[in-house]
Image (cartoon, rainbow, N blue to C red):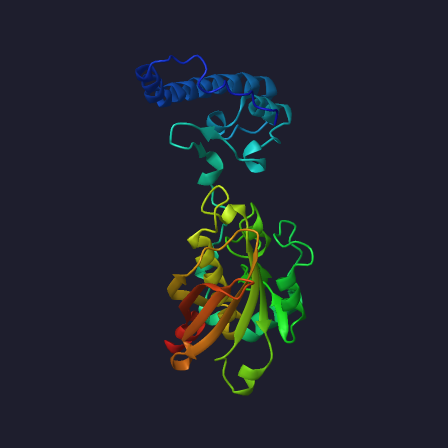
Length: 328
């Protein structure tokens, strides 16, 4: 589609009176709504003329086109014999009738089959998760936050028994795949300078030799960028710190217990400010299992390079696959 015309500079031609400005602001939604109605009516009339010229060879214009498309979109639709569909390419539209504005694309469902409705009883087990995660490792992150030769990340990579992995999810066919879109994991979490968490399973075999996953451990290196700050370059937001602990404890459970583990209780203690653009170590350990492994109890911490613990947590997760099986 062609470029949209630039908007007039906000604030131009406004009166100096606060009352005048308030009146203009309060009437803006009405003016915008009237402009939208007039534009829709004009595009409807235009579409009737173009449809008559095009004949029966061109399909009918979609019902929402005159409300959502630009004039150039409508003309291009008829010029291409109905082949042009801007809503399928870049569904985007702005309005100023609500604080902060809105975007038309946000009314569309991104995922046609939400994965929260997985059949837990049929989900892959921990060995499947562990095998696929170790095979894939941690892929290159083009938006990653770690500098070349990062000391802590290098040490974790060299530490004996540490195996790098990243979050896996189940697709529509219940296959394990990496998380392409995630608030807390992978490259998606690092976009915008938010969080870059890189996990390692401490696979020294000690827990397996005891016949239980109690004692299983995860270590990770993490960095927080500007997008994770309280604001304007201040220290990392408490929510970002909690996100890292929540994600790390969950991943330890999933790779040792199975992919259907979900956090049910989470208690965190923030002890010190967490600086941006510095590397911290995350350590997690499974300390207890409930009856038949249906509940998993995990403790975790985040430590600065100087050895000071900046945050700690205790988490309880539910293994929904085992809970499901116990009810059948």
